Structure formats: structure tokens, C-alpha cells
Amino acid sequence: MAPINVMTHAYSRAEAYSFGLSYTRAKAIESGDLIDVSEVAQQTGFLFPVALSRAVMVDCVKWGVAEKNLKPAALQNEAGRLWDVLHLAYVAAKMPSSREARSVEYQVYRVPVEGLSLDPAAVRLRLTIGHDEGGRSVMTICFPEEA
Image 1 (tube, rainbow, N blue to C red):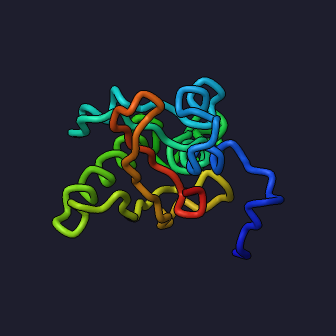
Image 2 (cartoon, rainbow, N blue to C red):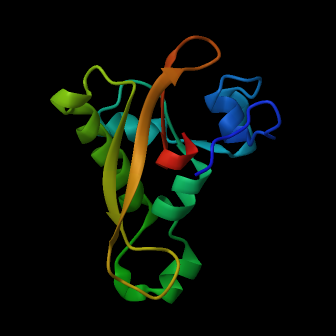
Image 3 (cartoon, rainbow, N blue to C red):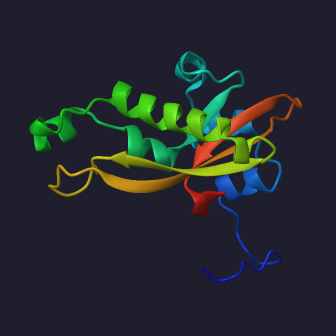
């Protein structure tokens, strides 16, 4: 990826949020750029609010009627796919090498939404801890290139 000229680059909402510009986490959740999954994340062990980027939600979690009809033998559902993303993030965050880090990358295997393959494919995700506009600790899961 080529370096970004910060003087002329038109920031996406995700970039604006990551650089701390005026696009707040609350606005990102309200607009759908981030999806709050804190309730399920709490069940996997997270103590802070957790949100997924829209791209992660679409690629790693979404499994609706169209996907079920296209790949009925895949035995996938959104609840299980979300649990996998969150549980593996929690495990990665608990690794001794991750304890002092602000972010950690980890790998998830999921049946791709696109194409006809039923074989799980690996994707890299990044869990980042930060603060919302009120200074509270929050976590975000996105693709490494979104961070």
C-alpha cells in the first residue's frame, strides 16, 4: 500500500475515527460503520465494549438467507460466526505476548461468503484497545488494513 499524503487524502470514516478526527465512535456505530457486539463479547469474557468494523461483519459474521441457500451444507450461522470472531480475539488478547500491547492480530477461519467453496479460509483480524469520546476503554475488531 502506498503512503497516504495526510495533507490531501480524503479520509474514510474508519480512517477519520482511527486518527481521532471528529468522527466519533458513537457516530460510527450510529452510521453502521462499526457494529456494537458488546453483549455477546461480554459472554466470551470481554470487560469493555467491543465493536466490529462493517467489513469484518460482512466478511466474517454475516450469514443470512442468501448464504444459507447458496451453501446449505456449510452448517454456518451468524451467532456461531460472531462467537468465533470474538472468542478468538479474547484468546489472542490473553496471550502473554499481548498483555501490554494496544493491538493484537489473530487469525480466524471462516467459510467465505463469496464463491462456492465450503472450505474454511483464514483471515487476519486486528483487535485494538482504545478510548471512546468519553475516555472509556473500548475495543474494536477490524481487518489490519482498516486500522
